[in-house]
Image (cartoon, rainbow, N blue to C red; front, side, top):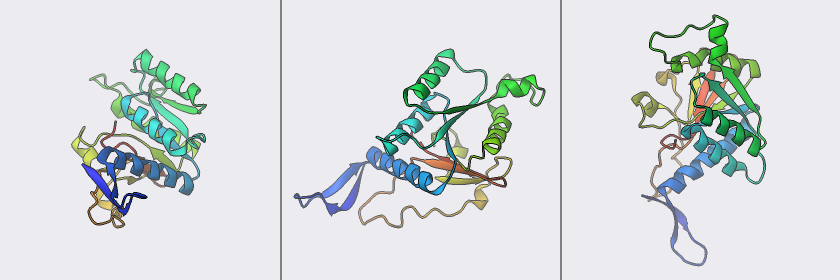
Length: 213
């Protein structure tokens, strides 16, 4: 699949085309730059997993050769492979980034959260994430998710408003008019980035990697 841009390539008279993947990447880069310009304290969720690796790559590409104007945030479940945490820390050091960590284990040790009977800690991440966002006053949060991984994620938008409990109500989702400027003959690529906005009253989800990991 290709996306056609109406303006011909210089000196050829042939319309300039982007592959579908290049179009997704271009859109994600655009979203990163827009959020950097519109928000004061954005943050990227980064665990060292495949989704967040793509997110970091896109952010690096969006601002190169300058540094990324965001910090990183990892909600650590305590169930990560040591190699993943080593990669996370190495990536932070390599690119001169700042990393915030919200620990699920810390909440369990303090009695704020309890282990689930099934042993999974993924559902326990919400409270540490929400409280870290509020404590650090982050006003936009980038998170990566694959659209085909779970049907609820297919409803996600580029910009998802969240309430004070980090809950998302798709019925309150604002329209997104990203394709109104598309030219004739161009395709409408799936969202490559998704951003979560957060304030004292609202959290939103702006996540890059809708279908990218």
